[in-house]
Image (tube, one colour):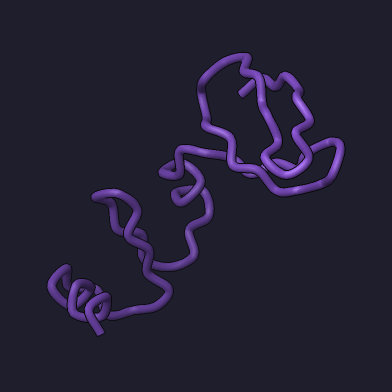
Length: 75
């Protein structure tokens, strides 16, 4: 109910509606959503767990929390 009231205050009554940071995305605009999200989701090469990796950090070392596998990745 709180989320509904927040969207009503923003003047948005259509679905789907996403609030990402201070931006409101109405409709399934995947390009806009991907632009606003500051991470990507990858799979660990060893155990296939899904990991969130920050965008735009250059070359980073990733430690999988599940299997402890360490690998380098360019973001």
